Image 1 (cartoon, rainbow, N blue to C red):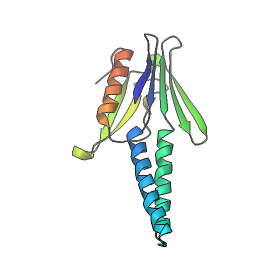
Image 2 (cartoon, rainbow, N blue to C red; image 1 turned 90 degrees about the vertical axis):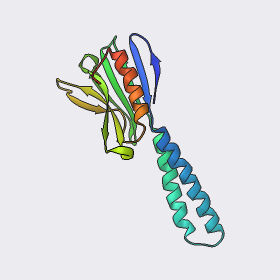
Image 3 (tube, helix red, strand yellow; image 1 turned 60 degrees about the vertical axis):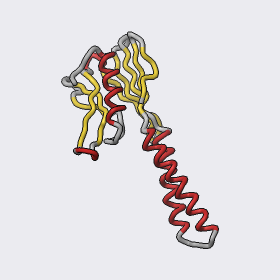
Length: 159
């Protein structure tokens, strides 16, 4: 999660599930290694570990290779959310002057707290929250830091 371009007229942020993607890829590789070793030693249960490892590694690659990009442009009065989907890229456009702020929603309590980054439009035909992260996840401080930076560029927003 980071701002890749910022000027008085344009802000571009790239949002990616880096921690979760790396976590899945590393553990997927670990299971692939153990499963391959077990299978080479003649143990049939190694196939199960290989399957689990393949799924985790694929999920990790999937999360790392599919970022969401937010483009806020004052010259065109547009807020564009670009997502890479399974069937190709998807784009959602909103009028920039309708966007009030970027919010970090949370659920859970204590150490089990999860966070979700959304674009908030308080009124009009696009009223509501528009997700920037794909789901609730850990990393509230990173999401909060990005939200504060975008809100500062927007000229405020609620906190």
